[in-house]
Amino acid sequence: MSLWLTRIVPDRRSREARRDGTNAIDLHHRLMSLFPDDIADSTARQDLGVLFRTETASDGGHRILLQSSLPPDLDRLPAGYGPGTTKSLALLLDAVRPGLAVRYRIAANPIRKPGRTTRELYNLSAVVPLRGAAADDWWTRQAETAGLRITALHSTPLDAARGTRRSDQRHIRHDRVQFDGTAVITDTEALRARLTGGIGKGKAYGCGLLSLAPHRGDQ
Image (cartoon, rainbow, N blue to C red):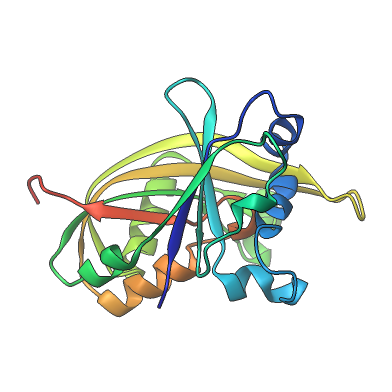
């Protein structure tokens, strides 16, 4: 299994970078354009293991973290878009083992889908975004199935990932919460599967990328 992590720092002077920063669909297409053209459009993201997350930088700008099974071709970015660097995650994958304490970060789309009876009774939509303690409980359950036992958790609401598809003007929205904290690995295979496949919904639009690093503090 091969994984690569790319950091792109968009230049706020770039019109293309500013546009991508406000439209999750445009950003998705931009990142997919960094990979070979001969992969079927309908399965390209899954085939390439593409996941990404945007984060606020210390100078008030933002950065893009892109994970993929192939290194992207950063020369495909428009001139002036911003610098990028790519590194292998092989050492991280090799270090994954039961009992290892790690720090984690994920921007996810915590939701629940009520049954028809519940929706009608409480006038709910088909997809209900979760917040606060309900979102924390969602992440704790997801982490357990991903082979992680949570030991510390801090959650931060983020702006929703939004965009409009140019082909049919369909709007998308994925509410996001960032979860940070520490955990202990309990299941290596489950964790590797979630590291490469992502967690939750909205993976094409900046949700679901789980980042790990060894944790040296108290477990």
